[in-house]
Length: 111
Length: 115
Image (cartoon, rainbow over all chains, first blue to last red; front, side, top):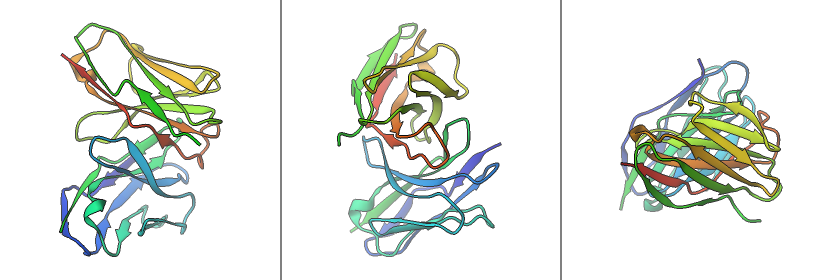
């Protein structure tokens, strides 16, 4: 069935380090792909999205490219900040009108 | 443009009780979806409504039901609460009819604790 797999956390980085959070998916057809971020005690905020193969979504220094050949949508940021500490969720639009989410990756950035 | 709002923020119920959670979508958004997020997990789709009709449903029992109103508000009702229903309940609204390019915008959630 349709699913999203993310790398397990927590990921702990020092400020200004490079970030990669891996995400792969299985789906029928060509889903739209999303990254959402959840700060402590809050709901989900849309970080970026891509709706077709080779599209690159970007926002606030974060980027992810829709790779159909590898069914991946890895999240990257060149220089993380303490304020980026949060849980990051990869998701795809799987049909049945539902977003399917990964289990989330907690990022901790230390000063 | 106002965002998605939910009420209450927190709620404590006992097993067997019934609960109603409320959501106010962004103005003009015809579609509302509800998700359950257990601690440490990703959100799980409960159901979606489009123009007051159920438009899709996840693997949740019938005791989870919903309503959508013409004023962009909606409700999630859960009957016969069980301990495993303890979770963060998220509402999300989107502009279209749930098509593949629709983007869902989430509210802050309601934290339900069942004792």
